[in-house]
Image (cartoon, rainbow, N blue to C red; front, top):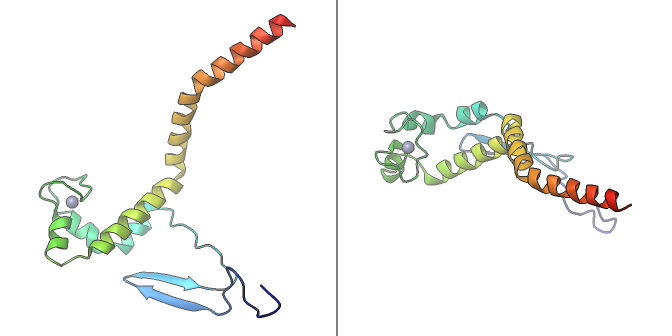
Length: 133
Ligand SMILES: [Zn+2]
């Protein structure tokens, strides 16, 4: 905060609460970052309307994109569901997956797999160097 006018970046001097389509955002001083929603179940509980419609999708693992007989896309087309809401639901799912420890483990494993060859190459180079000494 600047002394001159008492303003600054990332500062909130009063609490406010915003409610929008079932999502409550609390802006409060001392909070710089809203913690990510980590589990998919709690996201689903916020988007129950989408979940409910999605049960009518032809494919049980429907991504509600280009699939035929997608009930979610039908509902959007019929104006029963907002596309914004579907996009928000997707974004939150993506965030949750990114924060999911099991998913991260999986990612690390594949990273390790791809760096294996590089490590092997390095080790070989080191052996060569030691031999020269
Ligand atoms: Zn669908």
